[in-house]
Length: 424
Image 1 (cartoon, helix red, strand yellow):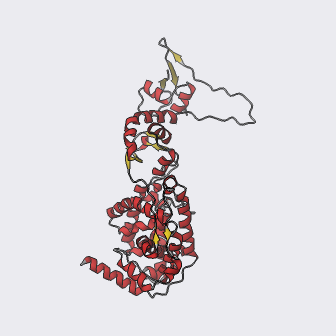
Image 2: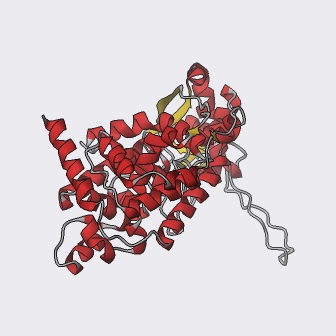
Image 3: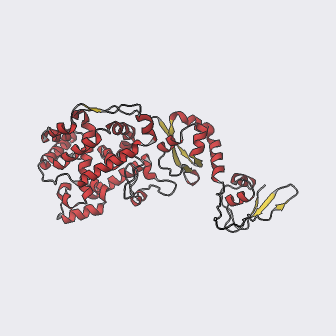
């Protein structure tokens, strides 16, 4: 009964808006499609797509897609949209039709990767959306936002599959700094996006408005509502929204349509076989990609592709618990060599940077070594000065941070002024 009621609501929404007077598709839609193409083309250069798409022939269209689409009556497109099992009304009007046509044109040579990535990411998206009781069809927002490219970055600084801005990402628990950008973490960003969409729906009580607010912020949607005289329907506040947002909801509906009805338009994609068998472990000690690559025999580019949230090929495990995603067949190698990887990573991270003397300064600079206390055992000691670190002390005495910590039974890198450390 509930499903029947939802279907009736959707059909009523379609019939109400099918003849609505909406502005023709304009530059905003073209800009959005161009951004999709840009994100997609960037995705094509990623390791996984470069490696696996070469094994697949491109999909083919049996007919002239644009011409054939123009011959399809509005009633057919409206009926197809209404037939989708969605909670969000798949409204049909001329704006939506124009976006479908535009995306059919732009996506028809890109469906191979879109469909394959959908298989790869959909279980993760659906799980996150379900956790917050958010409609499953919102997984298609990632097509509009980023062309499913976790490395996508917009001209205004939004990043990742769900295109979080810095502040919004931080507000929803995503760590963003010079080492980590969790907006590019598929799992964490999906959880944050589902949470954000859930909160937006609680504010507006309408999924179209919640989607619009996801794009331009709740403040801009509230302004549009006020300028419209208090109307609470996306299509009624449409003229008062920012230009990009006017095309955002139609683009979402268009992407949903294409991902479900591409065979009806003569498209027969050959899917790219992207390996789906991966596992994730939580790392609680510092780890560098270079040593993971060396000890378990995995390509650095593949490591980066599977873990796009790490900006500098380094997992700062000592500061918390962080995920490392690997192909399933590499997990035993990681377990076997974990201690070697940790030790090698720690030693490499404790190396003292090289200080370059300016070219005009021709003086010879000799490091000033601290006075060493020598005992009959041959051991050497160092008294900590202001501003010194374990790394700088290790460099002065030709040893490593790990060795100093071991000699002095130190559990962390913290030292204090005046402390006497054994260095040899």
